[in-house]
Length: 468
Image (cartoon, rainbow, N blue to C red):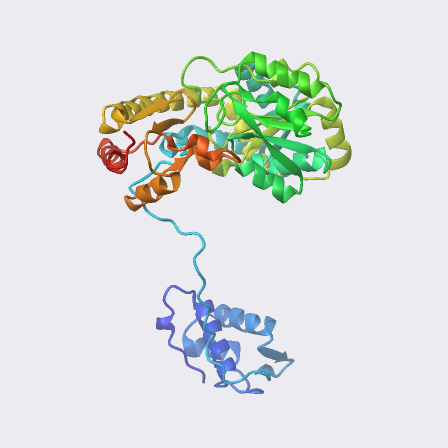
């Protein structure tokens, strides 16, 4: 009778261990072709395991072709072309994604996970299960659950001054998914213009989507409108509420220029990326460009990833009427990529006022972080050779250091001290040298003693190599 040491199975289930042991014996030739296996009941009694364990083992070996079943005779080992093969040795692969530990990561647009209202969200989810029951199992409309679209429209009216029909809103699993749908909707003939410097990830999406794009320089007011005509741009991608990473707010005059430019040709549009709009540190949020648009040329995109948590994966875009009609007629076969359960829960979170309260708490927390971090930088030796600006621009600020070091040398020196930093030049498509020595510092909730070490390490780097 076959015997296996089941005490050596470690954390594997009994069935997994027995299956792997028998498969290894078949491959090595210990169990020979044509050999009859014990009956399931006799084998189970011998090994002192359940008959179900042996049955599952035999079924898996049968499924993979290692054994065969003959009616009224039992199970037999199949003949294999490869014999006397030892257990497979797995190739050694380089780990492509590895979590590394640092003293500080100043590059991350970190979410305040400990500030997430877990108790409230859990209550909302429980209530959603009670209220909607089997409705949660139904297919979600292609543009998202109506209740959530209505809640988003009401939120945009209260918070961004936008008069939006819920029927013009499309819900999707994050802005990356929505951008991919938008690129398909606008077609291959569109040419996109992106801000320089600006958010570089969007151009990767353009490349993957196979569309044409070019950079458009910004000045102190935002994207230069004259370059749009010069470069043949038909779709301008802008972040007017506060530009990332520069942090400037596009004034109303430049917004009007862009809107006039878009209205001049029938297939010109403006993509208003309003990510991070909730985190204006000083003053009230600036009205969106969409709320100023009278010619239906602004495509508005936003997400709950930063305000809630990234794993929620709920983003949305607001399409002008002409594009919405085109979407319905050509792309409504795409299924909504956000579960109905989470959409109903998010709708309730918005309707009941929990979202606005959550944003207020986050803003207060970020303001506290901003004041503490900026104060500690200004009180350090770094203040003699640096300047902080745009410290009211969302959840980061810019630190301009007078130094002879290149940006590559800055990043390398900081990394050697366990600090990750990004430089403004990394967000440039051209003229990167113009922004040399400017660091993009994201707020962090690190303890004062850690922050002191970080500032001290940066001071050591720059004060030894600062310009006169």
